[in-house]
Image (spheres, one colour):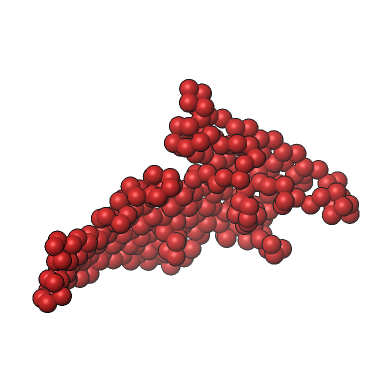
Amino acid sequence: LPPEATWYDYYKYPPKGIHVSKFSGPYDSSEYSNPFSFGAGAVLGTSFDNGSVISLRAMLLLSIPSLFMIEARASIISARLGLTDSKEPPFWAMVAWGDNSIESGMGADFKMPTATGKIFTLNANVESFFPLNGNTKSWYLNIGTREKPNTAIVFPGLINLRSLTYLMLNSQGLEFGSRVDFELKKNFFGIKVKIWAFVEIGAQISFERPQFGGYLHFGGGIDVNVWRVIYVHFSMNAY
């Protein structure tokens, strides 16, 4: 990682989390002044089913003088997590108190069922950064981002009902966006029907020069293809 990388970058770098491969060994740290690190971990889970309903793996790292980090990962309706297994649980969270910043993050990459996600999928991410010195105005809190919004999908491949949201807050302002859409495709004896609709809202607030703006966009449509002979299309968009 580059020298300007954050502790959140360190955490996300593969393999994600606190891992022995990310530590400097005795030979690499021989020129460090007072190198010391301490780590501990534990696994918790529901007892009546050996952790199949809920299991949690937590790790603590104290690296003097630059870092105190706690991370936790959770799994539901699956095999119990092990302390050292390589399986990536669907839920995670971390807090890092470094010499220059306090950073935190949490996220989810969940599927139901776990193997296919045919009923429900969730991909979400929350991260924050608060500097302790230097440019204290560089703080931020992102609950999803414009480029990678938090996304939930119900019945992918069937009705594909999606929800995409994000909220970005920093010293310059606030930005929010949300979209809900669906797409239904059916084939009745060679007659293909496609129906879709969406609604999208967003807003921006500037703290530096008091300004506010927002938008609303919605629309939908239907396509009908009758045996590749007759084709009907209707759609609408409104702002």
